[in-house]
Image 1 (cartoon, one colour):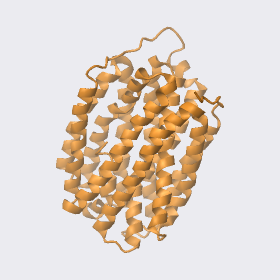
Image 2 (tube, helix red, strand yellow):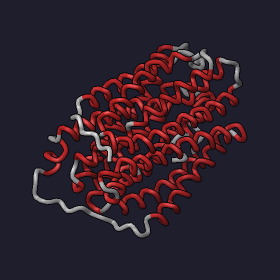
Image 3 (cartoon, one colour):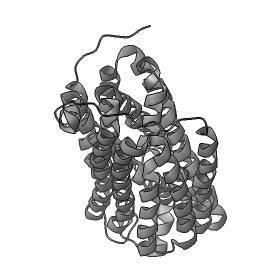
Image 4 (spheres, helix red, strand yellow):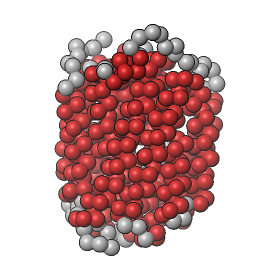
Length: 388
């Protein structure tokens, strides 16, 4: 995950260096998310047929190679669009396959906590990505930031190979029954969770793509220089991801005890309110921006492990990969469009050629997804509390 946020972190420097409009800048994030969605679709489907462990490790090899390629050759808008999309295309096989490996390893009563820690590790990777990128931009520009963060997938490949040496590659047999249509498409709980994940991804991935630039804009308004604003903006946004780490590691466990619905509803509603407020804080004290951003980072990600855990419980293991494939296509497809929409709203609501200072309506567009996710959580069946 170390390379996931390097583009977002360096975006305030890349826009003038590469002559990008906000819409063009958003399109690189869109290309990344669309490629990630395609990768998730193919790799999740493939994992049902050849095993999650095998797909996970193959994707790790490809992710390391493309990360190095991005660091060496991304030097313009067109090259970044192509190479960053290739990074995403290779890394998609490490997400849903990891959830499948967790589902095979942990029983239902402990699965929420396990998936929560898995996603918490992702949040830690995002935070470190922002910290490393911010420091590297100040020390040597965006090229150094790209090179430093490209080391992450290489190290991850080595760690994954060691960690999975004793893990069998499991392919669940498919018994006679209703098939994918009955197990997923006509499964009301699974489809509601899938829709909730789609709207959740719209809000979360759009927020992740643009928050570093937004915080940098807040700092620039307060008088910080461009590079200093980028560096401090990266550090503050990294702190938001650390609150997401806490959310992932705690909300999954909480849902094991109190039920999935209540946690999903609380997280989705609170993050929606943050989306409606956050973008209007330009010019306000940076301490207030940080406080709202920390709550935003916590709640926008807090429902992610719960959505994933609930989905593994709603779909039989033999069809879980195919179900996650469709969910990933919808979720990351929505998440791919969101940064482009935010960029377009910024272009429309700000004078051309200047650093955006009006961000309110851009974040409101993300809050619409949060509101829809809240509606999906509300419609889930109530559960009995599991306090043991």
